[in-house]
Image 1 (cartoon, one colour):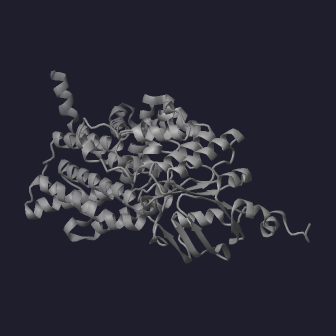
Image 2 (cartoon, rainbow over the protein chains, first blue to last red):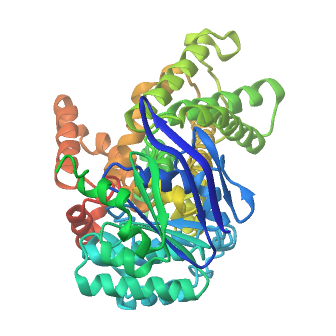
Image 3 (cartoon, each protein chain N blue to C red):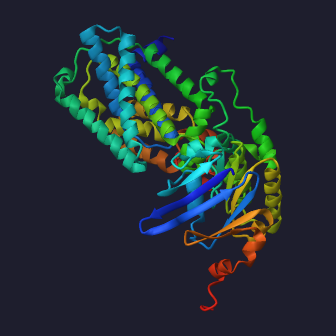
Amino acid sequence: MLLETAGLTKRFGGVTAVNAVDLAVDERTTLGLIGPNGAGKTTLINLISGLLTADEGAIRFAGADISREPAHRLAARGIARTFQGVRVFKGLSVLDNVLIGAHTRLRPDVLPRLAPTRGRTDPADALALLERVGLARARAGALAGELPYGDQRRLEIARALASRPRLLILDEPAAGMNPTESLALRSLMRSLVTDGLTIILIEHDVRLVMGACDRVVVLNFGRKIADGSPAEIQRDPVVREAYLGSEDAA
Amino acid sequence: METLLEFFRTYATAIAVIGISALLALSVWLTLYAGQLTLGNAAFMGVGAYVSALLGRHLDTPFPLALLSGALAAAVIAVPLGVTVFRLRGVYLAIATLAFGEIVRVILLATPITGKGQGLNGIPPKTELWHIYLSLAVVAYVLWRVQGSTVGRAWAALREDELASASQGIDVRRFKLASFVIGALIAGWAGGLSAHLTFSIDPSDFGFSKAVQILVFAVVGGIPNVLGPIVGAVVFTALPEILRPLKDYRDIFQGLILLGVIVFLPRGLVTFLDVRRTRKLERIGAADVA
């Protein structure tokens, strides 16, 4: 078990955004996280990645209790993420974006760089990552904000991978992608899992979720309402009701 | 040759003041580069000025050691201050650091050892032109080299997006604090140099108008690289001298020039050097000060 949450709860004022959620993610698997808008998916991964602190419950990652750890330390532990609606560093170069992703791995080089002959960080790893996510090396010098939206998405994934994480959290990575791009994303995810990565995927594209995930968890109003294989989830009446409304209402 | 020497003799003070202005501009540039708007550097300059002058006067501290003590005193004060005020952001942060500046000014006004409102007079003129320009060269070189390092990239990332930076493993608080404390160190050093240049100092030298002036140097010069604040300091310290023939209309023209720069080169004077990149940054709506 790489990641485990127990009774995880987060309230905002009177609203319980995440309500007693138990989650278990095995190493080298892909977990899909789905649910209607406002179900608490993003809050849940904000808790897991340390951007929010839970009111109740615990999170364990690779055997350690990480419930109270801040985001930057979790990044060092091997949790990387992308954001809903892309948050690349727009005003910085594509290469710098990836190098910042590698922040936890790179040795601080302030003092050595005071020598005038010392060059910048070796970009070889970063360039290889760009290629892996499907971005041309030639674009490394461009400003991240200049890239088309789909490429910014890919860059964000490259930035997340640059820390060599054990767990990668993708928040709606396929939003705005065309079917071909979505397919490329799916094969990228598969190859990453083959290399030993564990993935949590939040996505509205049902075909991508059902095709790419080993297990799917469904949230509604902050609660986990279903947990199973993609096939089980598709058959689950509770899930159908959450998405389509109850038969009485219809 | 003769005319050049004549020029230096006539404008020696102005040239020295320009160098000190450039140091101060770099001190606030550092926090701006990390995306933080702080206005405490005039007060840090004051701390450096008073501490170094008092050490020289009462303890006969050698000049370099007095300078260093002044700079370190400013940095030491910056640590708890930074820990406290970096809970805030944007204009709130600016106002909090401004309030700190006022506190320092009032303490200087009320304390007997700092000479209250009269300030300190008869400070030995130990600052030579080369002290100032060597300091400037060292600070500018170090900051320029830091830009391409892991630390410089972390600062740039903070400026772009704090939340995303934290998720990349950057300790947001620590990096903000580092830029603030190093900025205070530079400002304190500049304050010591300035005190031993001008013979006398008083609390009003380090108040609100000084804080704004330092900010104007850095912002009007430009944040993209270390050249910006230096250019800004040179232009806006020299401008009053250049515009002297205009007499009573001087301030008006100075204001117009400032307005013109802000309107037509909103990212600073140095963006002249790389217009294409600046246009791109504007188009994609990247962080304001970039």
